[in-house]
Length: 150
Length: 195
Image 1 (tube, rainbow over the protein chains, first blue to last red):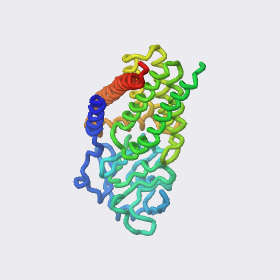
Image 2 (cartoon, one colour):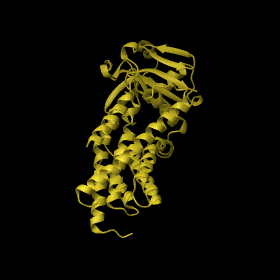
Image 3 (tube, helix red, strand yellow):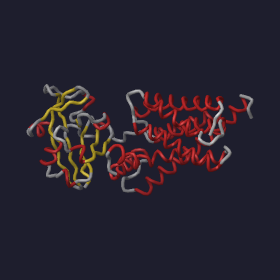
């Protein structure tokens, strides 16, 4: 029993070693969306995104208003076909590496509000990814950065 | 291979234990995004499978335990999950191969089985990702590097350190699982008066 208790403590310790989020929410400028391409970066506010053609997509029965990722990246001068992957980063440190094929459908959005125009919930942040019909972990909330992997 | 009713019942018990663990604790750990959850889950599953092997020291028994666990995973909280099902089966196949190669259950084969079985969870996404989920190897690799920066606190460019670090941790967790299963099996046998 002593050994079992010791092993449990060891496992809990190991799990604790990797406490997932490394970025404090307070230090991240969540009011802007940053697109990082190598050493360059471009920032977009909600108003900037509202200037693009908007689309509505649903995830988990909720309608979201936003701009198609393809349109947004086009505006940033990025051709989806010419990149290897795109990493979405949330203010809580969670991140998702997207295949370009996952982001190419027109209904994949960077959402900035609900479909009725009301603000996203506080736990969704200023921006969130919406990939209809995809699993929850790909529908990143609290999005603040898209890193282009060439 | 013909198994006695008692052996079949024992296999069913251990397979069910592993399966129930997967559909309950597995779902919770994955949902909470707890670090090394895959490794810990594989370790606990393998402990059950290896203890089962001591009680049914016959070729194929570990594979059957894994098969039952995999089938139970069909009743997973939150729907069917192909990845973990493949994971359970492949861990059972690997454990079966290693244990069969060594013959009689012993501490050393258990250490090796645990280490290989748990380390497999690190390798599995590189196979199931492209085959089952249409992911490219490159993105699976990026995921591994991201985990390295997040869990080990290393820079993304320290590729060798990330891979070596993960291998070390997974092998350690697996070997510990093997050692624990040998201890637990010994205790159980002695308490049941079957030593």
